[in-house]
Length: 82
Image (cartoon, rainbow, N blue to C red):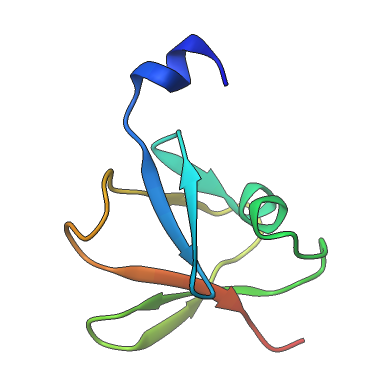
């Protein structure tokens, strides 16, 4: 972990029920797959836990994150259909 990461906010991502820490304000699809340990061809969806709306994350997309845990809108990430 770099000094910049140690000083910045910690983002917590719910990946199929597993709480993962991330230290950037955004995450890309390849970074998300790597963090989750999923193969490069795995479809990934973001689930809005307030509405249960599932949205596929497209290649080249960047997801903006909110720091902390339990604040703002709650999302989870999961594998999509292949």
